[in-house]
Image (tube, rainbow, N blue to C red):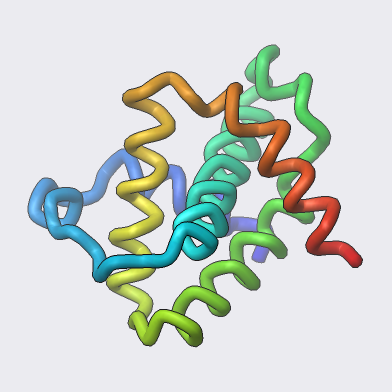
Length: 120
């Protein structure tokens, strides 16, 4: 489970173009937010592992972010009836949007609140 952020980050950056273009099945807003925060945590945890100064401003996400990632992915698979490939495609889509739009830092406060709420 410790490798989830690094694996996701590598997958997101190295995914074949065809996989990046394939649109996942329509997800609810809640499911998209779960996946968006999962992708954000994986990206930030990966940056924290490389010593990124901006990422260090967030709390450590290696363990808690990985746990959130796994639980959120499983929930989306169960509730939306998606397989791992479809969830992976949705995660890549969300991560790419965060990176392309430059919204990773902007979404972190909401995602950190969701992470804290998930603990309860």
